[in-house]
Length: 218
Image 1 (tube, one colour):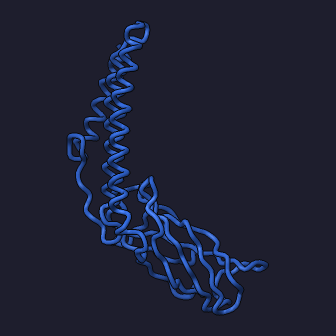
Image 2 (cartoon, rainbow, N blue to C red):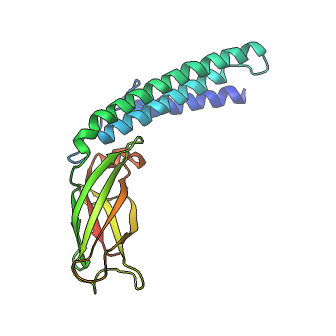
Image 3 (cartoon, rainbow, N blue to C red):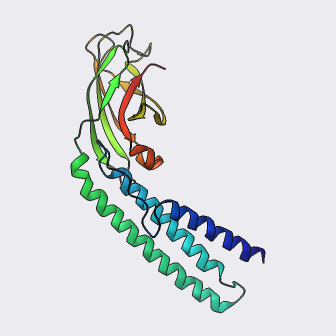
């Protein structure tokens, strides 16, 4: 009885989740973003589809009596059925990402900088849309004021901090803190950093309102 009750509760919760996202096998469509395009929506729909498949599979499996050998075979068929659905969803997701890649690869990332950082960003562009739906980028910097720049004492390394923000200035994700190798410590020294990612898959609905990267001191 407890198992049956928990299955019903789980199904209700999943149904509420699906209904809140627009119903059916597809959720509400997230608006296209000025920079990321349809990427947040593509990732959002994939996560929703995965959740539905997982919920449906659990509901089907919970109806089986695992003390019966005949239900073992039923369980294997159920697993194969939902594995096929997962593979189909993955194939669709990969195809959508592949279609989107040319529109983002090489694109300049919008950003702004606080005053007094002691460096300027001379290039900030997309290098890749990953298989998970994140956006990898490459950053190039030039030192403008060695006294202000957060350059480490004994090595030619600049500490950079940045924060993703939405159209209303709200922070998205977490503060990024990383080090950039420099050609020197003097004014005009340059450096680059690769594989920084705009992690859309962390919260797709917020990234639908992504606006820019802020380079900050804190």
